[in-house]
Image 1 (tube, rainbow, N blue to C red):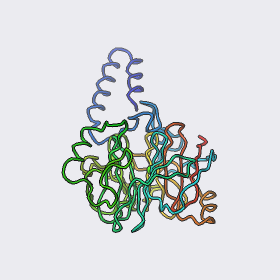
Image 2 (tube, helix red, strand yellow):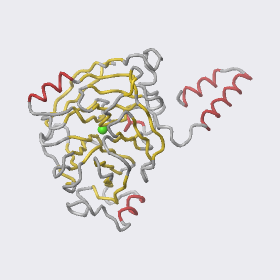
Image 3 (cartoon, rainbow, N blue to C red):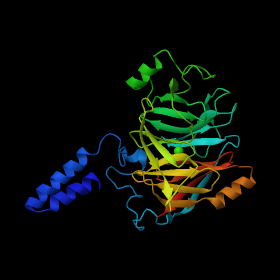
Image 4 (cartoon, protein in one colour):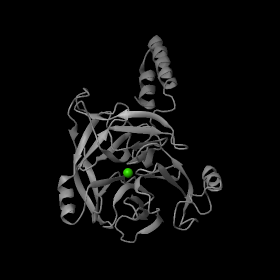
Length: 328
Ligand SMILES: [Ca+2]
């Protein structure tokens, strides 16, 4: 229940019921704690208005955890060029730009470009012994996972010329300016390297809920992490039809729900962040088969286009990025 809906219930309740309801609402809020996802926080950048319910938690499907997920239909709105040498691992949209992290040893990089433009700005080339993975942007800091090294690169995004958050500035000056990066140690455009962080285990996909980071490691478990030090706050077991959903890869937080690629599958899954239940699936097979004929590999790469609510989807070495609109 969102804050607005709770307030509406209280406002409509008479006398003693109103007091009891108010206490229940207050109790629920006190138990919210620090680790609940900010389901509707951040509003526009997360694709939902403030206090609007998460669509995967208000579905019209049966409430049983074993109920089959609802299949999402979509229409293709547009198709854009995608650099075919990009072994896509992470994709996100911010202020008109797509940001992309890519993998493979000796080829991993971090780039940005505008949808529809073939003019790609290479922001950072990762060291040859680092295999790039998922990418997220939280509070104007990019987090870029690596596969097996545990190293998590960070970059500050200066949203206005000369302005950078105090934390990011302090971090950049702490004597460890991401010195494993083999490109210029200074800012590239309005991106500057921060000290990297470290996490245990493999890094696959990454996203953020407006408050914390969510990471995948190829298993059926997602990890909620504090952004400042990647400390594990909670683990979420993802399941569909009562069975664990393995190989969770690239992630995207969309309107209070987590959308994930499944490695070596053309199916996207929509996950409730409170229960781990897969509520919806989206079959990208028709698009993926077309891209594989053109040299593409696995489906990977999900970005919410915040300015119109569409999804931007691609895959490893796909020649195209697709903008789709859900039919729901
Ligand atoms: Ca993403």
